[in-house]
Image (cartoon, rainbow, N blue to C red; front, top):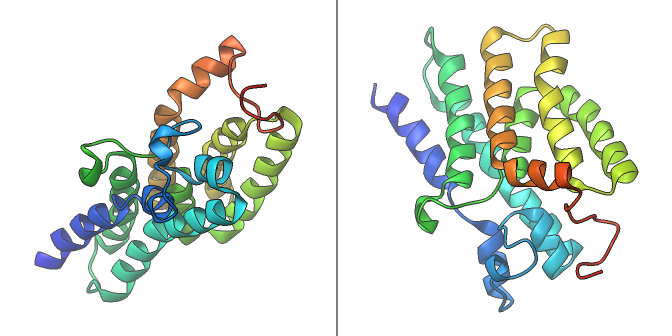
Length: 202
């Protein structure tokens, strides 16, 4: 059916909207030229302050959550509906990471992935949020918290007895987030990753 193709496509184009860049532009700053030069919520928070960082987090998170919610509501009941709903979430994450509006560039997918995970299981998000906070507090690195929190989501879903489709969706999103963080992983291994506890340049 047309809707089965339309919803994933729309999900990608919505996910590709660079809210961090838009919010920064509204206050006269191109976040791609500041801080880590990433369009995600972490860099927006670092460059523009916590309020605009939080706004970016919410907007990017909704990019992952709303397409799945809409697909679940509007797509007709069919044998592969769960897979199609999940596909919408994955496409939104891919849109954020490889935005057509930015020439294939984009963010690292944590906030948009968070929206997908939130749709799949709020309980799993709750557990991983505790892991994220603890990891960032202990290590000083947001990247460490993000990687651990995302990587453990499939495990929580498996323990909760989620369907194979849901677990696989979470695993794909987590893998994408890890792949997009490869530079952070290299810097962590080399001891060169910037700590959230320290101001940049110090």
